[in-house]
Length: 154
Image (cartoon, rainbow, N blue to C red):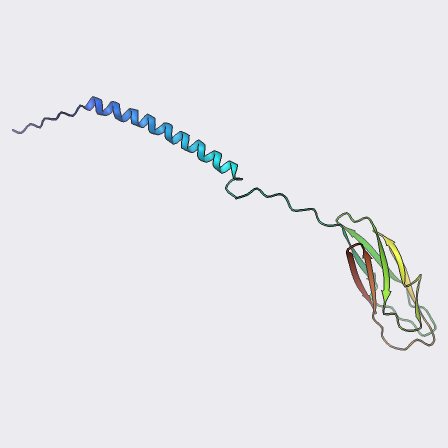
């Protein structure tokens, strides 16, 4: 019969391992807390904290309705409405100019006028008897500060 003898103390082994387990749990707990704080300090792992985008710049749209008008020489065209619609809180006035009027033609109320944001202006073109016959393309330009927009009238 064979009998194995050991100098190994089971009680000491158990006591040492439970102390090690308690120590390991404490280290793990501290590591989890440190990792959580690190992730929170860098905006949830998304890198640098970013500021929101700047608000949109106030602007306007310029429109002409209808986009075409006609007249017989010596008469006025039908009324055309020029409108300025504000965008993103725009509240200024827009300087409107007409470019490309045929020779002998004039705009009523004028080839340059001012419109407040949200306003409209009726426009007619007076065609003289000497004006050339044919299609003319008139550019309606609205400008204020650094903003400038155009619309076409034929």
